[in-house]
Image 1 (cartoon, rainbow, N blue to C red):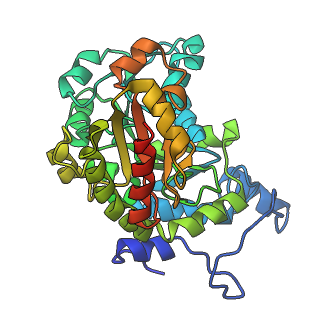
Image 2 (cartoon, one colour):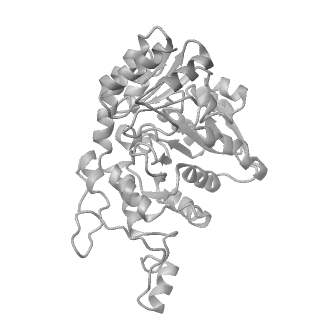
Image 3 (cartoon, one colour):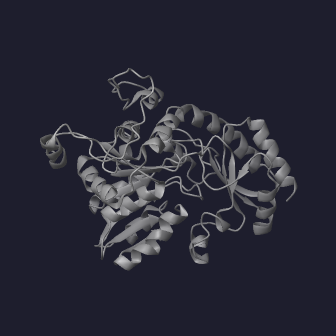
Length: 393
């Protein structure tokens, strides 16, 4: 069907849909590793690219392709590249855009593995990196070197909820011919479209908001142009970062309700953040929907809503954090985010534990920092659970 004039929720339901021979309302799962050719000539044409056709699921699959088309449409991009996890998407970008002697600039508060893998594993390939506070554009400018070949942003950042001015960074990057990749996981395409703001590549851990049900691990890359798509897709294929068809089918199902799930969670998040900001045992709260957020005005210009992620600092530091983590009853003490369940976690000892003490300090990851992913439960129940847990601190 023609998708050009459809709204977001309509696109989320219909974009990329496969018209199968039996008229199924839900696209089938092509749970197959390989595809048979009509004859030898047909196989040769498929392999040479002279004719479109599926060959092998690591290279392409109709079920995976439907998901790629849907997310690309929602991100206003040229094409999507589905991967087996969010980190598979990150590493596909790193492998395609970086090489021996090259340099990357990243925001200092990133998802822990996105930073630790570049500072650890990639150094043996002669790749260097600089992690700076990208909310200050001058820090990015000062970090640029002749060998810089990628700027990697995450906004809002994990777990600090810092917001980077995508337009400003992309303008600087264009002046130096440096591609910009934005991890859009915290917003999803429902709340933010980095490609429209000047980015070249956008990635998602679809494990989070896009799937939304804590039952799939998945990633996605969307490129603005065919040139970047053609550079990235072969890397995903040859590295074996592909998605499984059933995994893709589940994620496509979750995507259909993305907008209404975020609407509910976001409505609750505003109330939860206000409750926390006024609680005597909370030092501060960072949530883009609060006027106290340092980038409150910027958030309103590049995001369509404040989202469902909240960070807050407990008075009493590490011990207070442990007590609260052990005292919640309905919220799940678990990593990940963006699901229908409210999740709470302690970044310093969990998702960002592998960062050095100095790196944690620079990124604002303190011992008392708590990250909260607000779900779709009744907001009164979420607040009551947090209130009773805070009473134990």
